[in-house]
Image (cartoon, rainbow, N blue to C red; front, top):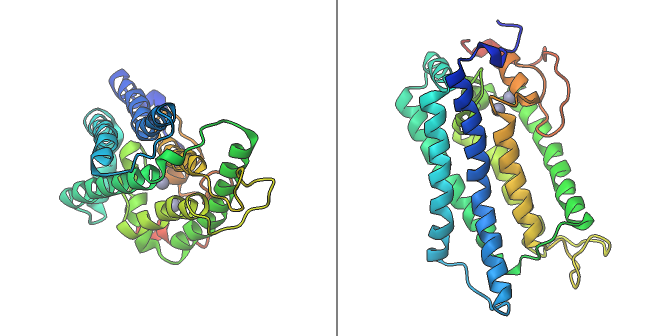
Length: 283
Ligand SMILES: [Zn+2]
Ligand SMILES: [Zn+2]
């Protein structure tokens, strides 16, 4: 097994340019949906705060631009970046056909973006847009909760259920399309909790909040704008964590199969002697 992270210097100028393009388009693609809801919410409040219902027409007007940009990001990554083809070969070696990889990835992208559009879009007319300490504390609190869930769940998959996570780890050199190389149950486990857990926290009044963190006139964590920011941050962070230009801590987890099981916190980078996934995967 290779013991070093491949440096970006081994890439041709064309590949490097492609990786930078993927980074730029993915950031825009993941931001355009939330941004379009913010713009619409501002228009609604300018028009006297009339309550405009989230309906099918509004869904498509937000979903289509976002999904078009995300598909374009995948196309650039697949056509011009070298990582996708290397990861596809690895997937093929481990029993995943090219058709399986493409159909699975496309289905995950289309369904996940549809779910995110609906989750963010509902109650969009209730957005209280601001950047303040209260917002930062709420989003930070949820990301800390998500980390407490993700770390043991991720380690459990490596140690006890490697069959669930092995498809994702066939990507030894991650890039944007690595975000779509998941067993569907692994995808639900990794993205479902942050997106649905934060929805329960910020889009319902189910969980009571102390006065110092509750929004004005609220006794719960209800705060649709905090949800929009959280959902955007979670998706963006997954994309950056697998990015071929930035090569953050999770990138090292893919290349070297380290025990970096945290998603937001750069943790232990040693090998985990108790993990079983490395013994199953064909490098
Ligand atoms: Zn892993
Ligand atoms: Zn990963």
